[in-house]
Length: 179
View 1 (cartoon, rainbow, N blue to C red):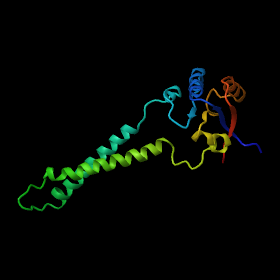
View 2 (view 1 turned 90 degrees about the vertical axis):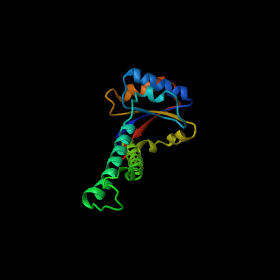
View 3 (view 1 turned 60 degrees about the vertical axis):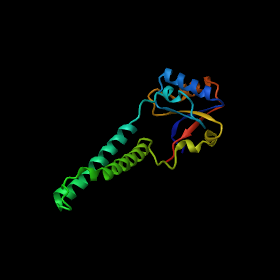
View 4 (view 1 turned 180 degrees about the horizontal axis):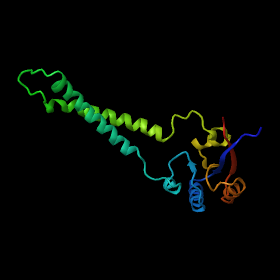
C-alpha cells in the first residue's frame, strides 16, 4: 500500500533562493506553505504570508489574571474571610498587597506566554512527516527548504512539482504522511 502524500519539499542551496521561492509561491496563490533554514532569513515570514501573533495578548491576559487573582486572594483572606485587626492597621491595607500582586502578575504572564506559544506552535510534536525525508536533516546545518502541504487549495501534485522544479532547487522530494 502506497503511503499518503503529505506535501512536497524543495531544497535550495542559498537563502536568497528560498526567499524567491516563497515570494513566487505566494504570488502563484499557495497558502499552506512553510520555509526552513538553519538561521533566520530576513523577510521570509512576510513572504510566507505570516501575520501578527497572539502571544502578546496571551501574555497580557496571563498578567491580568495573575495580578487580579493575587490581589483578590490577599484582599479576601485579610478583609473578607478572616478579618483580624493587627496593630490598628486597616483590613484593606493595599500597600502590603503590592509585592504578592506584582509577583503573581509576572508568574502568570510568563506561564501563559510559554504555554500559549507552545499551543500556537502545535507543540510538543515529537514527530513530523518532514523528519522522514533524509535530506531534511540539512535544515539544521546548511540546507534551505520550502514545503507546500497537500491540503493547500491550489495543490495539484504534477503542477506543484513542476512549479517547484522551475525554481532550480537541489531537489524536490515527496513527503509521506505517517500514521
